[in-house]
Image (cartoon, rainbow, N blue to C red; front, side, top):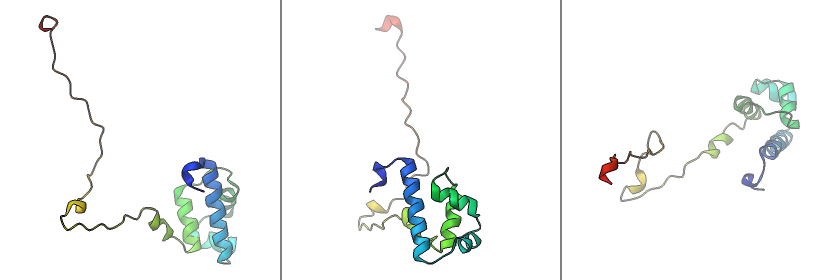
Length: 112
């Protein structure tokens, strides 16, 4: 199911289910996972049950314990696009700001 159609809680449950399935497919015990990742069993169990969110740092530690840290790279991979004219080779802007409305020219009451 597409995550865009799911609530935050449903996404957390789905991620926990997928992480646990990955752990079981790799035959990794919980004790090995927490030892390799640097987290603890209490946090791992809370993540599995969906009892409160975990930090991104803890999620990274869980993936590290599974040996699957490279999966995060695919989340934000940008496709390489080549353009012979160079139009697609532009560097993105450093900051994105709200466009401010330029003040309109002041008009005196008599000028209307």
